[in-house]
Amino acid sequence: MKFADFILPEAIRAELTAEDKEGVIREMVDALAEVGAVRREESDSVVGAILKREELGSTGIGRGVAVPHTKHPSMERLVGTVAVSHEGVDFDSLDGDKVHVFFLLVSPPDQPGDHLRALEYISRQLRDDTFCRFLKQAKSLEEIRQLLAEADNNEFGR
Image (cartoon, rainbow, N blue to C red; front, side):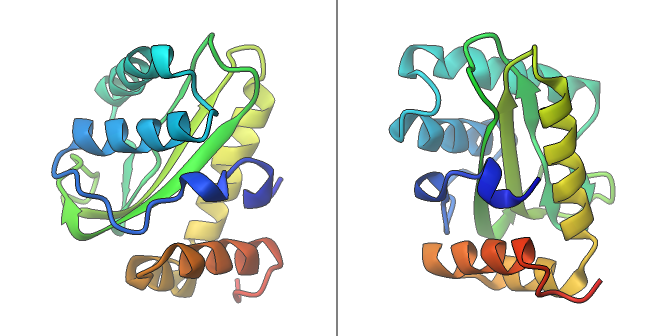
């Protein structure tokens, strides 16, 4: 699995305006709804499902990164997006630091393998300090898209 398999380039956000956890999740789900990946009438339900998942434990995994995710019955396939907050958002991260890079995933409940493979791929890529640093510094959609493509092509040293 690669970013190209589930990240929708047109839903990427290079500068989040949200200032809290729920706002970030809503902004990212709305981005997916704008491109037709999440049905508009299901947006609130998807946001609620992600927030419910957050209650189990923060998906702020540390080092300025969070991977909010959920399975939702309205979904037909795994979709995701990426967003950057240059200010950073308090996301109850495991290390207590603000989060600057967000990967959001939503998948159908009957495709747990794809969901897990996507989470594993994201976490593997995020182990690369250079990739993380460049993502946090990205100022445009094109820069983020380029970084994801470079990660998919194994252009970062691991």
